Image 1 (cartoon, rainbow, N blue to C red):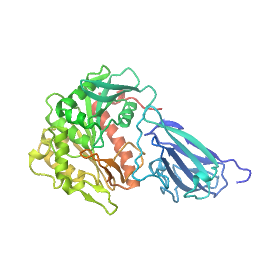
Image 2 (cartoon, helix red, strand yellow):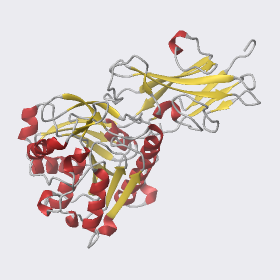
Image 3 (tube, one colour):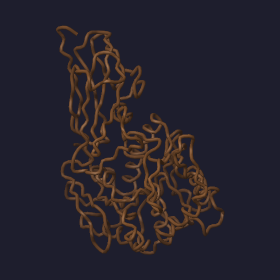
Image 4 (cartoon, rainbow, N blue to C red):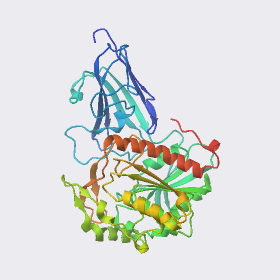
Length: 430
């Protein structure tokens, strides 16, 4: 390395979280072993890292997009491996999950190149070069608005520009609280999106929510915004949020979603109220299993899928295009079996509305692309407020592939059904 000055390039250094980065190291000696390393300090002050082992080519260059990592947290040619394969640094707390709760600030990631093939001790070595990058959920011009009206709590995100735009009501799962990052990213892609809080960490508030009217009010808040095309509003749900979306699409006489995207959920348990649904899950809690490491497995709770129509949403009533996203190694909920039953229920009359994306070896938490995979993580059980380690399932590489493909296809599905013409779809860029 004497007399050489390695040049590390990361493009873009500031981008949206669903944008690919190009990482190139130049000006190395030929055939030199190097380690590329990423480091992120989370909002909870935990350190996350990923790394790959490379050998420079005859020109002294490493191009992450085409050169294979020979080892590390990922292997092979993986352009985004330095992000999706991140894991807590050795010695970290157990059960961590990396989530961005403050969308007004970026995820800051330090990408460095080190001499030799390293697997630990990065903080004790000096890198050959480092680039600081920013990963944003919020594109320039996106507007964030707190919603506290008609008893509804959420956050509305408006894309930049004069509009009008299609709308999305975005609902997360059983972890509860107000989770904004997916809605913010949807706004960065041209949709007015509202992240809705409906499972509050305040038990009294959750029990006070009238199931149908609360969600119908939330839908109308999106629909009646002056920047929204009123007949082009979708429902987007994950896990528990899927139950809400399917119930609304099937039974509401007040709202008519244009389409639905449903990730890792089920049609079992038709909802009369949120407490009723939580109580039903509690009643079936005796089916809970534990894996060999003591992680909680909820997959069997809704098995076998009931044949009684009174115990599940009547999918024959769905009148809008529906995309179901399923990870085949989902250990949290019986989503594979649910998708099969949903397809069977829709076959007689509305099967043409159904699209199923099924991903081998992907787990329950199918998130925006390049989010690190968590096979298990800490979880607060809504009924008891007990802290457990929940098994979500999935394996890092196939799960990462599923997240990238699912996000691209979800955006295409929303654009197809919500935008009047392909020419009217805005192009997102940071």
